[in-house]
Image 1 (spheres, rainbow, N blue to C red):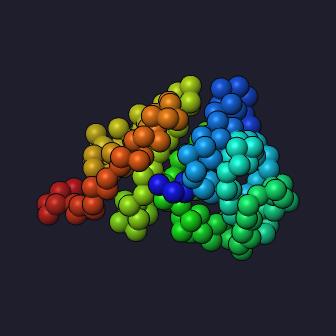
Image 2: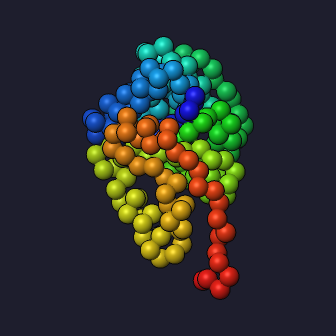
Length: 193
């Protein structure tokens, strides 16, 4: 991977370890010589990820829609800020600029962005590694839901395994570097419900 897209909250939340890991994520990828692609905001976890990369001389590309430029308080010190018209264009551009995707803690917007790109992978539109940094078990319930979806035959185990999860940023990054796409099997076998 030469670049990674990070989706995370525009709020910092209240967990000090999550806050520290956001900064550490940006710093880690900068130290590895990788370009950070993110939502372009200066506040919350988004701002901390960018700060971590910039403080370590990393290249940081922000992608933000015009209408969010003020709400998310766009970052003015980035290597590059790309303005787009819609949220869909934001994700599309971030997808085009990245070789992998990581989700840190966040709210609805974080989920929506990550899951759309995950669905694109499931459909075979990309073969990027998709990772969840599960700091302090923030995503434990979501991960259990993935397993429930498999158990109830709404999700194939092959697709479940597309989502890489770890509490350690370094271990998650290693999983992502070693990830090999398993291809896209048929959605359903004939006669399967």
